[in-house]
Image 1 (tube, rainbow, N blue to C red):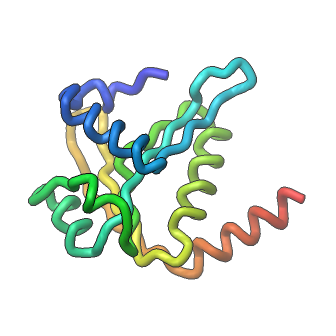
Image 2: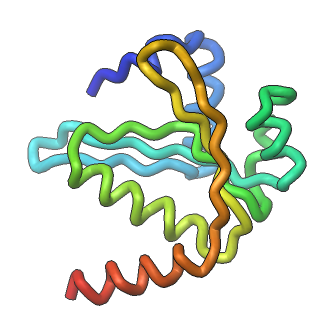
Length: 136
């Protein structure tokens, strides 16, 4: 699974993010029946002030800043199929239950980045309940 967005990141920055996610167990993989990776999700949990600073590019997150808080920063996302995307969306919704907000950055092929903030409101819980009801 190759993603151009990830290839633009400096190896030292990207490896630090991944090691932090692995050490905190803040990651999920979606694998197909051939054990090929079809999706990846990595996140950090932090406070609103640290999330806002990260989103604005004013500060990075230390490992200590990434372990707990009422904000979810999604700092790694890749899905190569609609099925992988759905599984990752369900996972990130479960992570957001009881949290205040999601923060993430949309990276586009033209090199631009769009900072994003979404409220983690009752929609998250209702959507999870609806998905659970339709799965059975």
